[in-house]
Image (cartoon, rainbow, N blue to C red; front, side, top):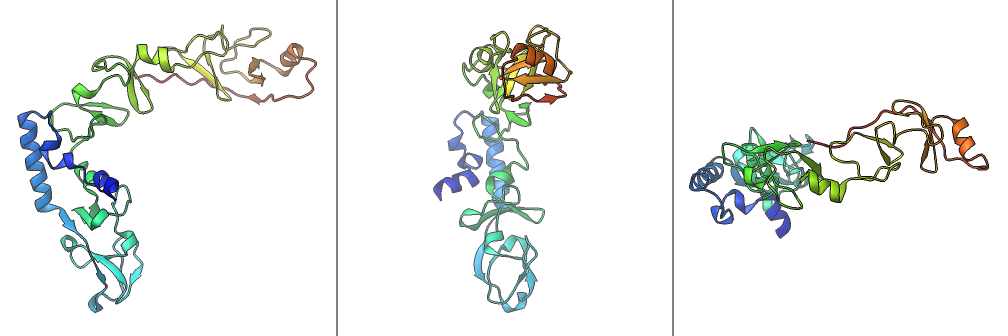
Length: 264
């Protein structure tokens, strides 16, 4: 319960004591933002039997009928509306609201986290709301300017080339030394700026010298191919000429289109 409560109601969204690095103007904005939300949107649902006058009313979320005496949840900020207890959940994340604490916006109920994010972006690094005029946006997420750093070496990446790894930015040097996949042909890492080709979960440099037939060296990019024991061939003939004694085959012919390596 405590973990769910902290997830749904992040203390840093309403109390500057949990945000020690904020500048004074950001602190002022956080105080005003928090006060406005408490005043205009915060409420706590009431668990009670559905009263007689509301007999037959539809659940606000699922629309199913609620009868007199059924367990229900009411939310005073939304008038004479009732929910099934299991339906009283955040409109965004669909998680049941801990202790029935909700924030309302445009007739919908939210947990505190996702209500706050309707109005302010959240830093993907520190999980605090961003009150600065500028922030960095990448891959659909946002960061404080000073928090957009390499996940391994912490070098600032603002204005620099980077690669996203598991949703976090990584400088090119760290990516190539720690995360880059080796080419099946030459064994060298496939760097951030290198185009790669993939097939059956294996990777090659997309250049003709690597992504080519293992026997005749014909480039295979955009061409049908046969894969046998992790080696590529331009045709069944080349594959059999390379391994004529094999009686079993895990080969497959497929039209192939290379995929670019991840980059910013």
